[in-house]
Image (cartoon, rainbow, N blue to C red; front, top):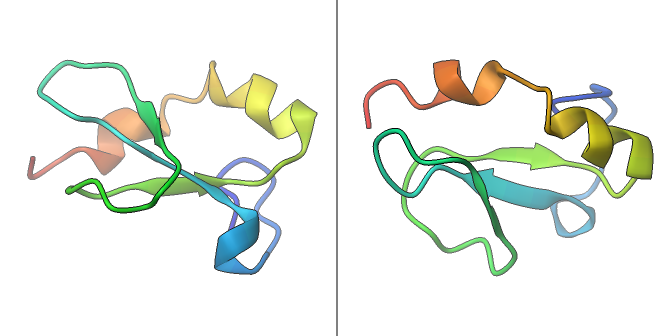
Length: 64
């Protein structure tokens, strides 16, 4: 599910993002193998643009 538009997609249609370290900005995990909790965004350009303003990644990082 895309965290921005909340629509469901197949996993291979979504791009995964993770925070690699404490306080670091999120990075795309194209191979979907980086450790840590990630979140997914669909390929819609509007969702990708809104991701830059999305603050949910700070909450998703808890426990890292």
